[in-house]
Length: 483
Image (cartoon, rainbow, N blue to C red):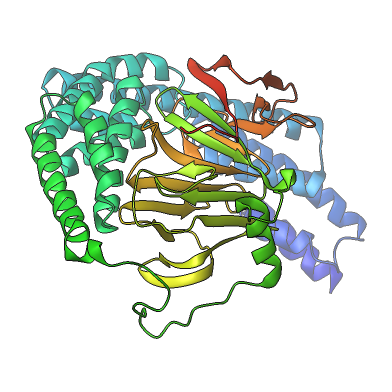
């Protein structure tokens, strides 16, 4: 059997059927025979000779296949390694040359498209280049005029109200990897447009009007923004007219009119004691621990925020006494107490009040709830950061005496200002800025950027600048002061 297999291998080798000879010589029955080793050495030499012929003819795949088969039979012999090295060098040289040819072809194509004014096609061709490209900066500079043209047209579309075209152009630039300051500015303006649409869908006309006015400052020549401002103002006036009409004459006393089938939740005895502590009774001395520490934080491009530190915060109308927050509204017989219990917030009062148009004496606040304070005052409860127990009360309808304050921050662990995720959105902040109450200090805060270990102290009646944004903190005393 052994002699027959060896004869077959020898015949295949002499006939040039090197693969058949290799298959026979690698069988388990032949490997241990002395004649098999002699034939294997002859086969390796024949495979290398054929590989070098393929290499000379630039048939690189076939050359490498023969050299690999020789390596499998004979291991890392000097001639085998040398042949493989020369094949790899040829393959790399050919690939590099082909890459240069493709790059030159892409450069010529983009240049022709830019010259012909086909700017979208030029940007698409640049985005389709396979990275990495050795001369990518030169090609980016070449396609620069097309990107500028698309940006100018996107801004023109934004001014004309063609928001879909503007958005499509920005997506094209982003996909091609051609960002820039002008593109970021247009993206922020489009984000405001989304905010306006969302506010209108929620019937929050005050927020929609505020966003539109900010949009009008950046796009003074956009007539459609002015028209939208007028339309939203009409909606707001009509809603306020409904509230100020005969419905505004209703007194929201307990039991005057029920809300749907919802039952009033009675106030717990311990919570009633907290209300006595905070609001005071004729025969009770207020507990100083219940008083909230208030500060006003002014932030560039954001406005003024009322910071309230403490587990309790009282909200009332213009006639209410001893409240942390006073809204210029009437009809609020008793203040509403916002109480923090762990990570939850409860709203309660001695007199029934409305939450989301439903009557309640005590209510567990959820993100998006609207608390009615008197006839016109509205506080929207928000928890923008789920991991933080700091909450926000957005003011709409009747304002505070200090009208620049648009939001009340119920400070617990921290306040985050960032580009997207945070309590307040500031596009220029990356990384985010975090504000924390200073230990053993009433009204002072520590401020730092996310990821940094160094904290700066922001004291009462002082200011600090971070990322071209000014933070100014001023104190508001609890007793005898109104804002």
